Image (cartoon, rainbow, N blue to C red; front, side):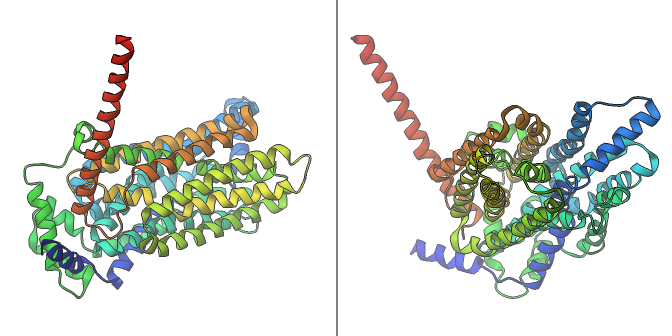
Length: 507
């Protein structure tokens, strides 16, 4: 009887995809997540013009001609400073999302994009390389905030049967941002020396649209109910997003979670790290977020042209091949978005990482032997496309989605802070270290990425449960049960180890 009541309540919590839900998902992603993808890829096309700008400016104003190694370091800093800004933004997420709300901080953080875009846009006119670096840093802070807040916001406004679909809309926009940057970076469009500042500063236009429209949408109902205790505002927000159907079941579920957290305030990062009850959830977001960035995808995005050049593609055709990979990203992202509610989270993340690992190994083999067999250059290009497709189907968006799903309201902002910081730190490491790693190890550096991808896939197979069509409370209960089993197994293993030692000692 109890199980029937639970099933009936769960059915009531399920909802339909409304125009309001779809509109806010696309709007929040268009002005935030898309900018992250755009900024990842936009730096690739004008790389030689930016280096020439640095070289010419240093010579004209400091009477010094930097060598190639110094220019590589300066350009690597330009690429990777975006991730440093992102890490700082991620550190602020927990406090800002709690104070201003999910939608509130998305609206307020748009000022960072206008500042950063203006700095990059006027850098060539001002003859200041530092403005490019500062602009990348500031837009990175914005991306660090929005990359965590957008999936948090969408995860909280979505009914449980649509949480996966809406949760992957930001990842589609990330792929779309990469694709737009690649198209606009073509030599026929903005890929000319005089246009690279404009190319970098175009991030302001999507943000302007978001700033005009997003304030008209409601705040997260879960935030209003559980953290603010505002029942009328919660009901109004649910009516806006649901339009039809019984919202009482959702209100009851939120109030149940609110009662379970009545003695617990929003946890700080330090308290989250010390909370043993969420140890396995925390380890899971650590593994998937570090694995997401150290899978090699950022090396592909940051240095696509260089990778294709090494694969033997002619200089003229590199830009078109790069745009082709961008189209694959968008298609793969849409495929993941439209299949996640049917297949679940686990198949997408496990299959994505396994396939990426296979393609990383393929790049090592093909690039190593392409001098003996020229046909292998096409295999290496195919492996690059495979890495991108495998990433966009699952690992691009699922880590952000399950970070929302694995934690209760009190733990969620700090969990996103931890996940975001690790994500951006790994992003910075790859962006800065990869050119030197590739120089030292050649194509064998992709074997490191292969090992990481397969390691994350094995962890997902053994540890991560399926969260499809589950409420936040049900997911917490699933992990609590799994925690007891895993802890018992660890204790048993330790006891067996001690017993074995004891036997040996007696002998």
